[in-house]
Image (cartoon, rainbow, N blue to C red; front, side, top):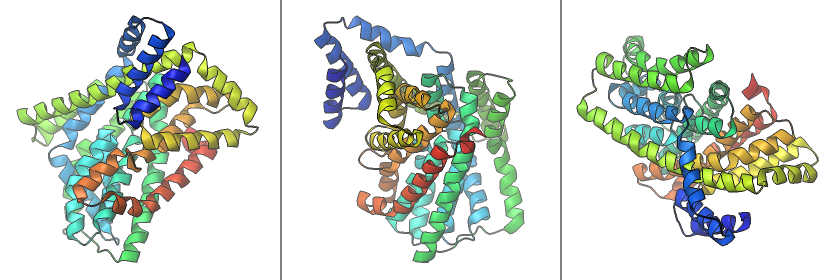
Length: 418
């Protein structure tokens, strides 16, 4: 039953069928060819939705939607300009610093790419940045958001691999900062070569003091999330609900820019994103059920143990597979599909599942700005109104940075297990 499922799934993907529909089509065809009732698939679709930890996803999305609108975005960009605007290519650095700060609120690379891209790319182009380079900065730096907690992909990995979401959140901080520093350096080097302008914000320390006081309530959200989880005050689901309440208070009482229209827009965005994620979760659970019934993870683990003699070779093989898969599947779908399989393989070489989770998310996030399916790549290119080829060529330094960070966290466990 496994072979027909895989082939039909790949054929449907090749003809541009959406990932979740392709998964369901593969499972349905495999069940039909094997003579099993379709009712089994319907039961498997329903099962993963009955998970209490799964409720954290829509609530964290809602909290991010509430915080990203209004004054917070303005404060964030201004703080970043005051911090790095005096560097060559200062507006490019603002995009990266903004992603690091934004990631602690949104947890979504797509939300980051849309919000910061619309705010910064037109200004960058007006100051002389090539459109492809402005789009490249935004599409690559927005992926830092999937590592800085609260991270939606890390929550999904924790759910399918039975790994502590708290540990994953804490482990994601250092790789996220490493990516940020690496991309900061790449932008600075390119800016020096292209003689891009500095972009300081006028006002000096007085302006910085005003902006930082304005942004503190929102920037405290990741501290609140990590602190509450780490000290065992609440579960991830409970913290996500508290984050929504916190976002409502900050937006409604501190910034005073939340109205009924903004609340409605945040609710609609949350519903759409949650629906898309949940559909992928439901579809992937059917594939996981078939693979488990056919004992594919166990067979794959035995094959890897017999084929590769050294742990470093297994890690290299996993990374190569994920780089290829990430170029064709969206990040949540790839995490849900590969997570259970790769945890089994990781166990054969004694790899900690927390480290594996960070390797997986960093690796698959590269696919977000890699053709042919890169989500942040297409969002940023559309905002910059340039050609995909221009953006991809400008992305080469960012690919190098991401590969270096990926290699470090793959072979230096202390960077994720500290």
